[in-house]
Amino acid sequence: MGTYYDLVVSNIGNRPAVKISLHSSPEQIKNIFEDGINTDDEATIKFKIEPIENCFYPKSEILLLEHGEKLSTAFGGTFEADVRFGATFRKKWLKLGSTIDISITYFDLDGRSFKSKLPLKISAREDFSRIT
Image 1 (cartoon, rainbow, N blue to C red):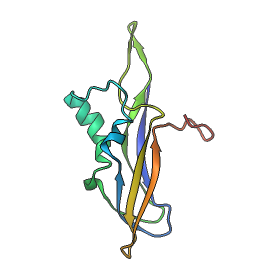
Image 2: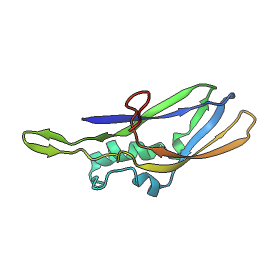
Image 3: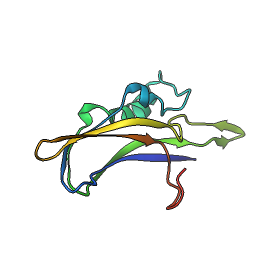
Image 4: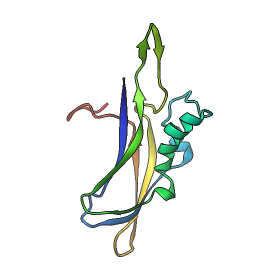
C-alpha cells in the first residue's frame, strides 16, 4: 500500500505573484529519498528522482499565480511493505517524515522581489485533525 503526494503552490496573498520559483540544494533533495534507492537505474531516475528535482530547477518557474490560485504537480510517494506470495517487497522512493529546506522567490506586478524560506515535510494528512 502506498501514498502519492502533490506539491501545491498557493498564492495566499492579496495580489498576483509572478515568476515564482522553488529552490533547494541537491544535497537537501537527496535527503527525502529512501536509503538504498537505486540511483543507477534509468527508470528510477526518469520516473522517481528527476520529477522531484525538476520542481526546484529554474526552468520550472510558474509565470503567474493570481490571488487565491493554486497550482500542483506530482511529488513522489511512500510505500509500506507489500507481502505477496510469502515474500515482502518494498518500493523505495520517499522517506516518510523527512524534511528539506526550501525557499520560494517571486515578484509582484510592480517588479518587487520577495523570498521566503520554509521546511517541506513528506507527510500525508489522514483526516482533518491528524497528520502523519
